[in-house]
Image (cartoon, rainbow, N blue to C red; front, side, top):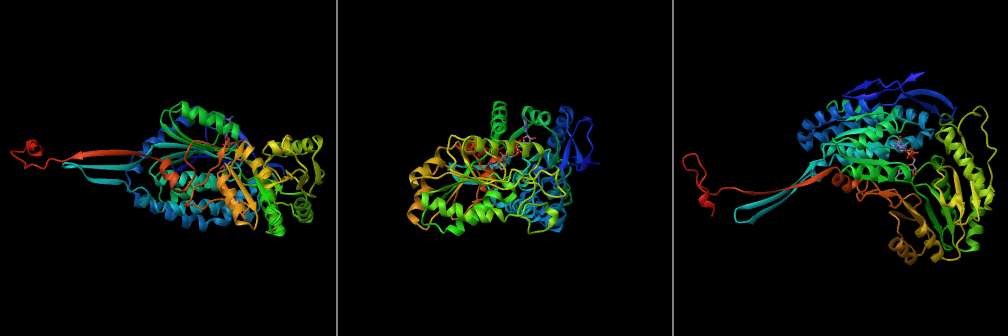
Length: 499
Ligand code: NAD
């Protein structure tokens, strides 16, 4: 049995708590390694060491910090295959998906190479007689990142990259379900030239998280995960006077207008609904066809596509559509929600409740499911299922369709499929959701824009990556300076000359 570690002060660290979490291979259902769960004392020490290391790192010029990012890009590309294989083995996603996870993280590291430009301050010459005023962006100090299981490379890199580039030290608490890639990334950062202690990886659970939230040293907290935990982290961190940004769950609607290209819409729903087994915060879990005829045409196109999906372990090759979900508990939860959909009267058009994969009977595979005639009062509509389940809610009009998306408590992403510019423009303008796609099913903004939802998908006010991340990980100091313009007399400044 492999024993995982923490990564502290530039080295692997086995931990001393004596508590471990099992890490599974979701394809086989076997425990493949054990991950140490940090105690309060271990977490506290990791934070203190980060604070000591941050002093010199914060004083390092931004260009040098950017060079670490540049080197990191090269090292991640060098190790891409190894990282992707490790990621797939712990998470279950296919190798192309794992490479996408790494690539989207890498793009934020590339963005961070621009740190010197992003961190430039402002200067007002002659704000008063002999007075100049300037503002500078300084690192917060030590920040914490508490991350989810579903993007074990991308999510940490979205936070650690900008935080480090701004001169902070980071204590990362990865998901206990797939901690290996974050550990590998921390090692690569050290190889890239990051001083020891500036990036600490503390594996753990609530005990480690609460220690981070209560620490007086931690100045900022970034969280990504489910909404109830996001709310908890946001309130505890802010009650302790910390800056916080907490990103939560989602229920993303894709509206299909009668004039949409129906093949494109169906293909989009397959990729966005079932890719990565639906374990994406930007997954489309609700299709909203407008009009009965549109709905009939859409469902007719979806069914054969869903039946063709290849569900298998990542080791079966690049033509696998998706793999297992992350844990047995996740599978049981998803199956329970599917049953609730049947019980509450939705029409299960594609039913794979008996799905099993020969040779992988203990793996956490869930076959693809399609529900039609779902209504807003059903649990499968209200809840984030986070599995390969697509719900079709038939709307009578565009107004009804947009109303559904607007009334849902989540507001992460949404999309509309239409050929009509007026409708698309109206949708983008009125919708109360953070990320919008027009004939694009998963509208994930690129590294130089920002990523964040609205409503119960986000707590805080600055988004992930892009310019917002440089704002989140710095604070502004403004200096008003008046220099004596008088002539030095007898070793003393002549302050009189200033009047
Ligand atoms: P999760 O909320 O279970 O766990 C996230 C992190 O919180 C983990 O590190 C976990 O150890 C920690 N945690 C869990 N329970 C805790 C508790 N009681 N106290 C303190 N810490 C606790 O989420 P998950 O299952 O790992 O990730 C899936 C969720 O993340 C989905 O809801 C998904 O939509 C969301 N997500 C959101 C975004 C976004 O940008 N909005 C991105 C990715 C994932």
